[in-house]
Amino acid sequence: MLAPPEITVKNDHLVLPAIRSLAIDLAGGSVPSLKEFEVKHKEKVPNVVVCLIPGLVMDDFGQTEKVSKLDSSKATKLPFFESKFKDIIPLRLPGKANEVFSIERTLINVKITRKSKDDMMEQSSNTPVAIESLFVKMPDWMDHDFKHFPGSGHELPDDWFETKQLDHEPKIFALDCEFCQTKEGSQLARISIVDYDNNVVYDEFVKPEKEIIDYATKFSGITEDIMDKATTTQQQVREKLLQTISSSDILVGHSLSFDLNVLKMCHPKIVDTCVIYDHTRKKPFKASLKWLAETYLGRKIQAGEAEGKGHSSVEDSIACLDLVKLKLSKGPLFGQEPDSEPISLRIEKEGDKPVAILDKSMTEWGITSVHADTIKQVVESSDDLLVEKIDEATKNSKVIFCKLSEYPKGGDDEQKAKLDEQLNKVWESLPENSTFIVIGGSNVSPKIQKLQSTKSKYSWMQKQGKQVDDPEQVWTFDKDTELKSLVQEARASVCFLGLKTGNAPSV
Image (cartoon, rainbow, N blue to C red; front, side, top):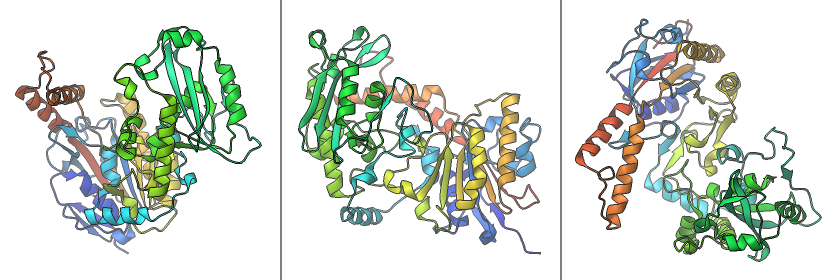
């Protein structure tokens, strides 16, 4: 009888990069070393499935500081773990003294060397960019909160409209809106459309249908006097949009989901500058248009905000167009300089895509648009639907990450029973000899975010030379000590590692 694969954990605890390296190694990829594991017959492992459960914490199983046998009396209502795993493994989550890093991004991204980055940027600068490659696509439609978009599978509500095919050659337009606040939320107060040559095609102040409670002048530039003189209605704007923008045209803007959601407009071809340019901290953070314009165009926009005069939607539209033109001329990685690369690039491609991610949203995974095509991304509306998709994923991808986010911290008996049932379904769908890893989440105290905010604000005030008198806002040694202590506690998690060899628990 052929010997099954074996994995032995050599350390008394694990860190996420070690689990990431194990997944790459088992999938036939290249890793420097696997000091934390002893692996035998890895060529017999068909799949590695990593299930991330943010609500699962060490308290569900009893505290432990090193690898130890599972205590069934403490894992009540979660019998799956005792039946499939031999040990409970303490896990150290990534972070630094004052911050816990993203579990998702750490799992799927590997830091690259300076030379690799330089090589990638040089290759990118010589790579032509077709504007079609910059279109918003899944999962960005959902992650950037476009409520309705082509192919969403949702019927367009009666009060929404969709652009139609017009009798003109495809054009490129930029669109930007300004809004006022009413009792029913944001309503359109100004709309500007600019063509690819920066000519203003349409620029109108719009009378909101509801009573205005805040003109938001600092940002919108809209005043009571302007609105008193406005006569254009939102219905007239809709008619103009349908007459001007064809479904074959390309619409450019910044955070266009907000504009289109208020306009109740659906359009298939969108280029969004907050998608094609990165924030310095990468996803899920989004760079502001003001910062992008100053950083890449050397242009100061929205200067009126400091004087309380607001933005110019024409100026913002032109900035968006110029950012797109710059991206087209500089290459696909321009504005998205990588500091890491997905593990999909480290694994030899055998099927459709070597890595698959299943989640209710892709935001936290930090997948750059330039590497999006190397990862199969499956977005579903519930954990149950995600579980159903794992069987299909194992047929096309070697490594599968699935996040089950509905189980809450401290789940009750009913919630534990449901999670147990879901994990059993995942296990049953795995091919023989597959590796199954379950990773718990971070037990983050709400006080961490409050302390981090206080520290950041205090630091900013100090740099501005401003006096901080409020004791609540002063950053002290005691607060710093408390923050570090809370972060260290939050970085303690739990994981489980098993092989489906027919003789579980096997690891």
